[in-house]
Image (cartoon, rainbow, N blue to C red; front, side, top):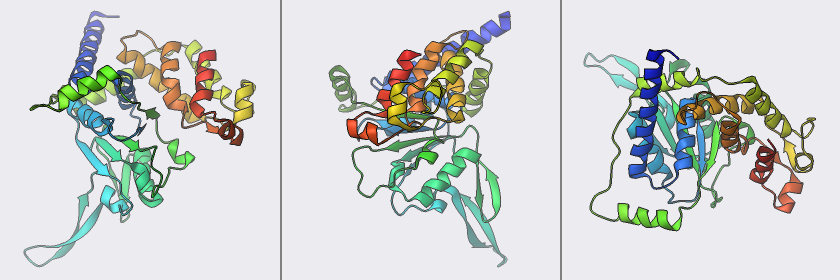
Length: 326
């Protein structure tokens, strides 16, 4: 590594350390979730965050937006939300001379970081409008296509305990999400710290450390991270092992899985391993990074069958065994 490249690497690692430290000032615990959110952001991927109410999902995303200096918008999904409420619409306006013309009013999707709160509370038509923007990085209103601002990332939340009046995302649309992150309860000590920080006169606020251009540079830097052939082979073996008709499928997969992960999972694992290696200061991506990102990449892409449901076996159980075998 040249002297200038070495200096850039040191600056990059110092910046990553500051991001982690600044996040910890506001968010108690959740270090692994923060690391995965940063990994997805560096990979230009979208996240589905699943957790019960009150686990600071919204605070976590908004804090990241502040630290990274990104334009942040929160969209509360409700049963009456329409596609135009997200994408924007054209309004008829009259000039001082009396001439009428249409003017496009952009919706909240024209931001860098979007929090789609309770995405399963809105009907499929509105869900599809957001998912199209996620995939194509553009929106089309009245036949005119408009590019979204870059970087563009969507973090969507979902409540797993309440199903009345919800519209679950189909499996094919879940595949558009880079990660599915399941957030658990804080520990006893962490919850005590949460009480101390949030029930007094003042609450810590995060400071901006980056801006959109620096986040884009971080995304580009991850593409230069080496990915050895042995790691690519491990990724392929892991993904093929999730497919019941594959020669790499285990007895558990053949008994409990209807459909395995597709090629998009392999791409996501490779990109995530590179980005996580960058965040951890590694010189190259390794199998350890693949293991770390495998569960959030695969848990929403492996579809269990009725045998698994009947025996109480979850996708996490199946994928975890495959990771351990790797």
